[in-house]
Image 1: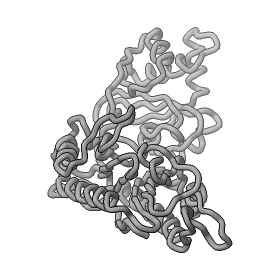
Image 2 (image 1 turned 30 degrees about the vertical axis):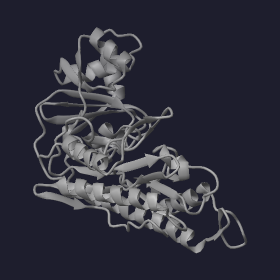
Image 3 (image 1 turned 180 degrees about the vertical axis):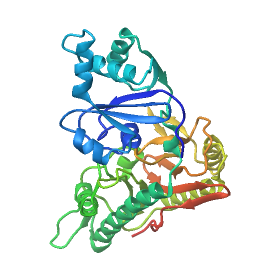
Image 4 (image 1 turned 45 degrees about the vertical axis):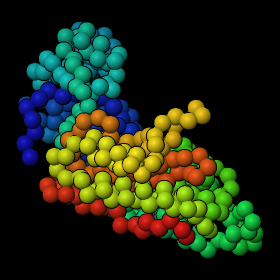
Length: 377
């Protein structure tokens, strides 16, 4: 596919910056430069990385940082710094103005402006092509999701094998099961599949009323336990994201109704998703349905309750990326991958969240998540 005729510049470490990795497919822990001009991509590499960059990077050419430093010195610059080197690279390719991502280092932008380069910030997404996933990218996301499902299956199996003793969930030998124990089961399973999980959520009872509470301490029977697992593949760099809510023991009638409402809302949202739909419309429809069922959203006793987060977000090289399914207008294009994750949260009853990933298609969507949805284990 032909690249747009635009002048773009980025400076970041591709291990932590998804735009840089997407642009170069070159993984490095230290910041380096990439720029695009006249439909061609260039990478600036140090002596340490230049050999590997020439072999691995998906760019049209790799420029030597050392050669560019010498070029800057010949032009009269004493002890050239990175701004001098980047300015030399841009001048070499006859580039006088560039667009940079909105998180581009301000100091670097000012230094380039001081060297005669016009620098303009581009609103996200910096690389719009990232929104549209290729078949290879969808496969990478699905492979990570398969690892996620295996890990959560192991966690559920551990809960199923445990028994209830009073107000505790205990394993063989009488050891009380904790959120940390179950998260460790998930994280170890993911590591065995070359996936890395950070901030895995296993939150029980009122801990789960805060959607991003990771969960700590003893797990309790007869209470909702929210699982939210979102690892990144160490092999491909792509994420997956899945949430489930379960109870070990008996679920109260209030919790059963809440779970049924969330499941209905998720199914309705998935049914609405297709190419061209506004993510805001999906979010608002679910919100209205919850309200019709008596599930109000708003502050109470100083804390939010109800459905007070977005319905979904894009997933790819970032865990949260475009497009969004929430309170702002955002059209969902065919080829994007988004989550559908409505939730309801009420103190005393608990939190319920169900999350699948779907591939947006022209006439609907394909669910990339096949894991069971069951409330009681």
